Image (cartoon, rainbow, N blue to C red; front, side, top):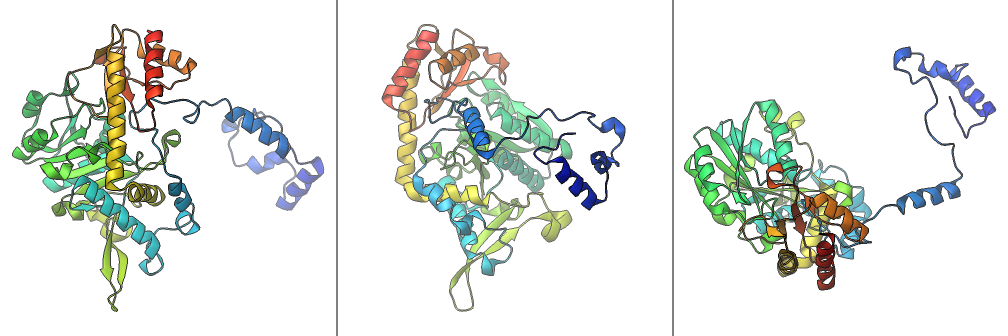
Length: 447
């Protein structure tokens, strides 16, 4: 076994200090059948300067968002992040802060969480928001569990137009509780409302729908929420926070819980995480919410202060009565979203949404003018939309990458019924008119 860069004398000295004579004596407790029996297939060690050059050469092989325009969305978006977000995030009092169990020494952390909750509740127009969850998928699954606990029912109706990865997490959660998951079918690019009426029975605990949907369609969520309430079920809306700077918020049409992925709020795509899950609810569900809720109060001198008002962590608070085993919140990433929302403000958020929508409409029009390209369906869209290409979308993506563009999301793997040419595209406020025009031309050339 190779132990470079140590010399033989150094290895002997270390073994002697440990009371061993051979290196393999360190592994005497491991059965022979589970040992590798050979050296690891690793290169020899390098001097630091040489290693630095080697790692940089490997990194240079990556193609990243800073090098080429991206039209890929499907849950992670290339949005502009003001420099102040990372500057504040890196302050040691935030970057190294610990779980705020002791409010008297955690006022800054608690206030940051309280501000986050307040902004999320305002964005969704809901009564209360909790301190954040791991990501949007976890938030949706936890909202389902809230509804099951509240209603005592076992049925769950999830729209097929919900993000496939979110549906996968929901199914994983449901297995442990033997919940009955039923998918609401698509009617072209939107939910099938006639099918919804058939699926909603007095055994259904919750309806879960996404707005805009994973396919980019603006769903008739108000009508769907009303249908759920008619049978005594709760309604969970997975609400995109950027789009809802313009769209009617879930609280305005009676949603019981609103959840979402906060990545677009000042958080870089970062190869898939860490992200931050948003969750807000009507007041009557506050004691069933997972995780923590920070409250603002006053001390004996009438000075404002912040405390952990509610925390459902099962180990030390609710124990067997807990409705969730979520024990924490995404404090640092939630802070990034808080700083972002504070910086851009309501009007800035509306401007981000509007620029994204206008860019998407521009690109959609250019692509639909290409012979053989058709819309997936008649639904209105916001900044993400799905189309059908006369070629396999994966092949088109490969051509676009060679031309210096990150293409869209090939839908066939998750929605085989839509065909190999089904393609999901997103446009954010970062995309310029020239980039949109050049991308449309590159698509036409690829077809």
